[in-house]
Amino acid sequence: MAKYLAQLIVAGAQVVGKAFARAIRQEIEASQQAAQRLNNAKTRTERVVNQKLGLSLEEAKQILNITKLTREEIDERYNTLFKANEKTSLYLQSKIVRAKERLEHELSNPQENAKQRSKEDISSGNPT
Image (cartoon, rainbow, N blue to C red; front, top):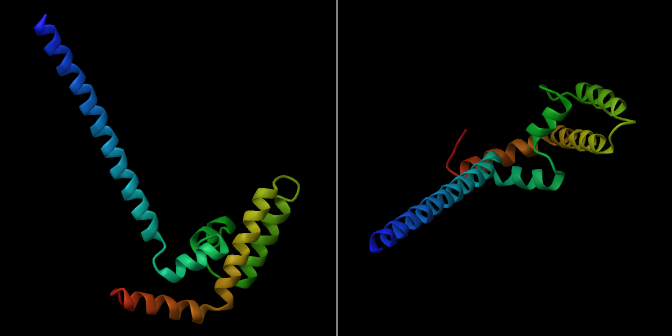
């Protein structure tokens, strides 16, 4: 009887131990992913602009499928995508509008954005 009781206790401890280890691994992975997301927005200024405008520069480029930041290319892609989604999805149209706004913001003050990025890089010890 004591033998079975000991086996039951050992088996229960193994199950609890494995569950605890799995939970710890999941928490570590979640914290690493959160840190990675934070590092993706390189500077404080970028994070503020991204939060204010709702999209990162890279995400806006992906939405409009743009590699170079030229006003003509932005307008052309915007008009094409906006008209293509005119009758289908208000959500997609909203994303397209936000992407255009983000890219136009980047075009309207590139010197300011470059200065802020360089100041942040220097102050963080990462000179470019």
